[in-house]
Length: 493
Image (cartoon, rainbow, N blue to C red; front, side, top):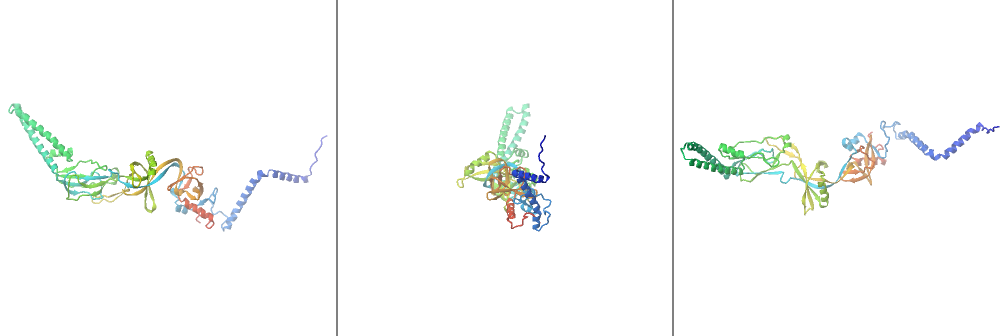
């Protein structure tokens, strides 16, 4: 016979069930209580937000409707109006994505722009004695290579005598040639002795040998082969000398221009397009006047070609090893030129030409030279075929040189204005929608131009950050947290 359990009356079922649930909840409290507590606090905060807005006298509706505040910590996030962005320079290139690049640790040394010795200056000298009859350029004028500069009436006695002897020999040689032609027919028929013909032929050979010597003498005076042949053809002495400007490298592609009569020749006008391929020469100094007598070798003027200059840097003794290393590795140098209103113009990618061979005993510095390509910036409107130009860089300009002494690959490099400092902390501001979130970063290296930020996971390539005005944004955050200013600092209501 089966036994039965006594049936619990219905009035005791619910109390027993509640006791079991309470006991079970107490036993498992550590498992479910944190989650429940967090949910309750979140619900209470959400229900309280409209009330707090009402306390500020604003509508229950969020005044920033349409903005996504998710992920923004109000203590470290700053919302800027369009006007504030423009005021801080955070438009255009004011923000940029993080990129890994090669950073060059560098030293900064004083420097000055100088001429290249033996390359920039060209002295124009009188090749022969004479009198200046015309000057076709003025001081400071830009002239194209092979432009007429001076005309000289020759008074060089040696040149006049050499030309006279050369023309005389040519005449005597013509006479001997005609006489030999006459005697050849007579000698063939037996009318004159053969000996007479041979004597005339020997005399002609002597004249031809003398003519070769006289031609060489004319070449020594500066005449070319074509000019010597011109004298031989015309049998006229050349008495006017025309001096033309040389090429930019100082060489002349034309001969000395000698003529038997004075002829006026003007300088050809030069366009800016032609000057790019063949830079103009500037008549820096004009040393003679019209009607002045000059001797052979006397300077007439100085031409300068500033298409390429040198930057003379001055490094200290302790920097010599680093400077030699930069030269050996062919690292590029940056030139810094001061401009108006405190601006600095950078010229990048410059090459070190050479290091000086000795240290200055007075300043204890080592000079080194950097190549500086120049460019034309302005040309005055030519008047009466007179042209003036301006070069961007001029000898005597002072500047600074940044010489790389060490290179680090794959680094996060930011401008110095992109990082704010407060005590031992450094911050950058990452763009997040219409906000800028402040992020603490570790600075590995900092100089007056750049900051190297550690690639430790705080910033990633592609993150957009403010490239300037970090200090101003840091001050705005401090004012926002201070309580004495508008709690919506950065908004324009």
